[in-house]
Image (cartoon, rainbow, N blue to C red):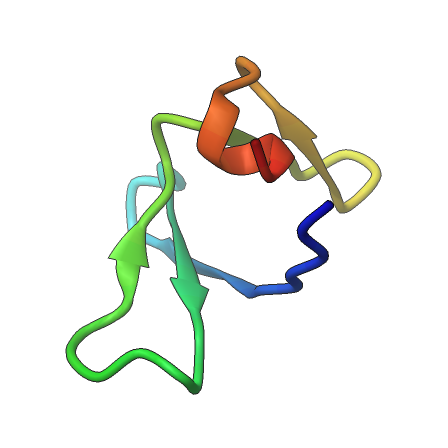
Length: 63
C-alpha cells in the first residue's frame, strides 16, 4: 500500500469582462521542476470552494 499526499493549488483570475479563469496545479516538494497541471483531472467549484475528481486513474489511487 502506498500512502502519498500532494498539495493542490487553485489560482483564479477575473477579467474586466467578468470571465473567470482558474488553474489547478500540484505542488510536490520532493519533485524538482515546475508544478504539474491538473485541470484535466480535477474540477474546482467556485460556488462552494470545493475540488472534485473528474475521473479516477491508477496513479491517483496509489496502485
